[in-house]
Image 1 (cartoon, one colour):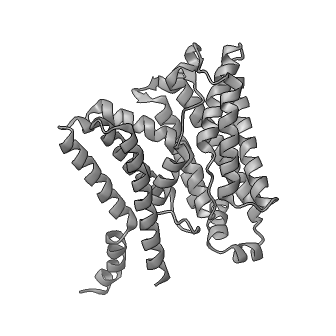
Image 2: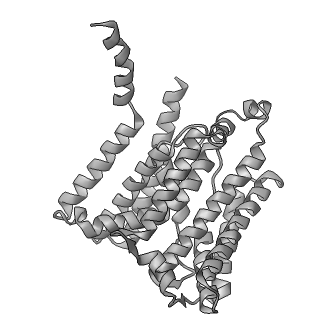
Amino acid sequence: MSDREDGNMPVIKRVIHSEKIGLLVALVLVIVVFSVLTGGNFISRNNIINILIASAIVGMVVIGECYLLITAHVDLSPGSVAAFSGVLVSLLLRNGLPLAPAVLIVIVIGLCVGYINSLLVNRLKLEAFIATLATMSIFRGLAFIICGGKAVFVTNMFFLRMGSGRFLGIPIPVIIFIISYIVFMVILARTRFGRNVYMVGGNAVAARLAGINAQKLRAKIYMMTSGFAALGGIIQAGRMSSGQPMTSEGLEFDAVTAVVLGGVAMSGGVGSLSGALIGLFIMQSFNNGLMMMNVPSFWQTVSRGLLLIVALSFDYVRNLKRKK
């Protein structure tokens, strides 16, 4: 074998042993299994579009959670922030505020929620899990309070189109997600900010010695996560023609499951948005397949919990391999 061929072997081995290859194989298996079980209906055009739309809404939060988990933090409030945002934007529109300022106000409020989360973690030194669990409860309650526990229906056509419309045959929520994903994938993989994210999560001491302000960086990521949650809540309200305070329950757990399943380490410093995207499609395909098979909703909830355990188990195994 020539030296050139020898030089190519490590590249081939890296491809073969790539975690993303294993994730893609898992995704294909999920698709094949549910296609067989549903008589091919799983891969119908309409169902694929449904999976993409569901993935787009959860995917907004996946972007933020991916960044956060790489820095060894987590946010449990996105589901509540999404519900609160959906109700608030619906109230603003119903009271005559134009669409653009209504959406802008709600996203800014979402960013403020993220800043509050960062203050609880950075200044009060609360564990991220506890701090965001508190804000999860607060904003879920506020979502019910501002609407009196009732759905707020909207008739603004531009708003409804934002959630259910299409451009060149592609659902608008999917377009918004694709653009957001590409932008933040480039930021994470190709910019100094992205490198700092990995450094803070991988070695906080080295990051501090390198002059990186970890608290300031995490504050930006918490704001980004809540901002995406607000955007997802707005899109969800547009799809449902109303803001409903009980929506998006478990959104944050779906997002964390997708991110961990996609290879992002809970301990921080490792992972990518491309892996998180594959994890997202695996999870959404799994959830959609269960619904198509008419699995009772409570068993679907059990299955999601089991899928999270599987994701965490994979994370544990990957960490053991990295330590060898």
